[in-house]
Image (cartoon, rainbow, N blue to C red; front, top):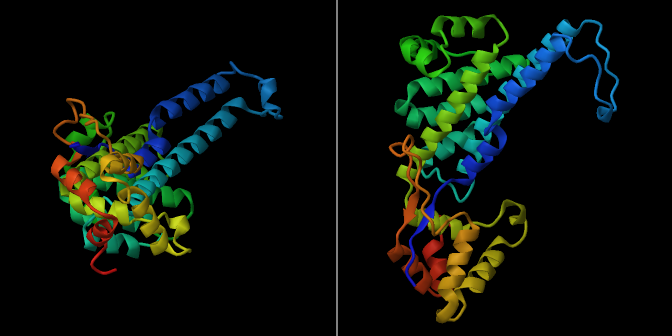
Length: 314
């Protein structure tokens, strides 16, 4: 049996989309509802909420709620970027650059430093997107009253100013000087929050494409087979690993290929190649695990698979 397999989307991107997939639509929905409150079109809470609600000033209450909604959206977008980087780094990792792995690990819990680490490797792909995401993270930290990572350097400001035409064209008419002034002066507007969310989504699309292009498919398969879930690493991880390999590659040759393919599909690979839209075709393509590689893997014995997948430092 010969089959190519494909990694169409990483787990990291799926997690990111779960958090931020249709964020701008949901923000607009919230703001529409608050506009109705501000215009006195809603005067009492629906009974199913089972909550007391009787603002003294509907306009003031709606405006404060709008501020909270935008701040929350900024926090969510920043957390989504963090989730993408963390899951991209987590084994089996789509980040195979050892230096980048180390820098991400060294950043600890700092989202700002994680973005800087990724920027060091991939920043030249689109400096504006990285600059906007760094602004977003710093802005979020200011809103959370954090004492760390609350400012951007002159290089980030310069990138935004030099890309003022693109900023206006791609991000809802956003003006570079007003955007930077808003960052210095206070709370982000809806246009700014929506633009930062859009920049986050574009950056993840760009990173996924770059990481997929750099991915060594054979090494990724080795990492996938060697991987033991984090929640199980406190037990005898190697015993579990050997048992898992034996349960698949220890089968008779007649049905081993089916078992191997099932195991790989359970870990995110697919026999179907999902082609990106025309708009994104030049940016991102699935990672292919060619049929010769898959056939070679299916032909191995448990002992051979263990030796093949074992990291050199293990």
